[in-house]
Image 1: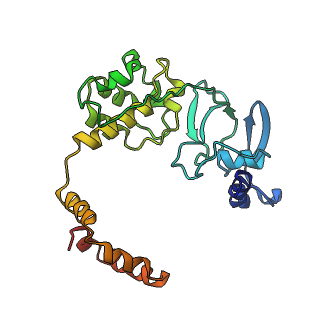
Image 2: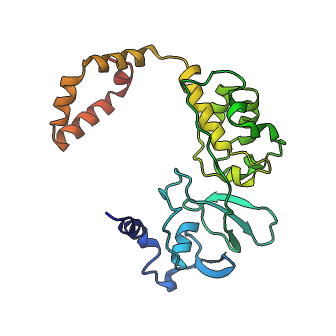
Image 3: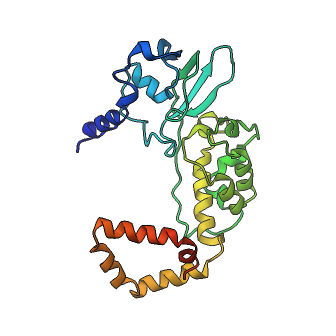
Length: 256
């Protein structure tokens, strides 16, 4: 399927909320501004749906449409409010007087690292991300995060070389880039977080004996026959197996 066809299918999947709308049935409307132009849209639409209702077609930055991938990061202002707000366009509903702002380009160069050759030591973060030393603790990155993560705190943890803290505080990051766009020190926070999680996962996270044994068994071929039998089963058989395991999940998790 061509890229054009794929984007057409994505738009079609969302058509129920943007096409065939009987205006007489819409009780609440909102005036929003897209690139300075006013549009009247149904008030219960998301920003993304509202833009499509207004006639825009997304060919990029629409992503998963479910709030997970971070592709549709959006900056906006509300009339009478000086503050810039951030959100995911796919999961944020329009508000009266919403001014959608075009995102400026922000460099997000990612350094290349090899976790097998990088020492698990305090200075590793600064070696790859010397710009974190410019952090002025303004907390703008935290305020910009649509996931409400404590972004500044994990950057400070990176400065201390605390891989565990960086991993824990950044775990829910979807890499939308809002933090980097707003940062006066030009830090690309989500790359710092990714490096921290990779390093902690490789060197700092406690090993699990049960998992190690399971991986070893897989390599030895202990489950080869069971796997071959499984792929031969039809859909109904697979559904039954799934439901049986779900009903006995506690026993399954304990390895019984």
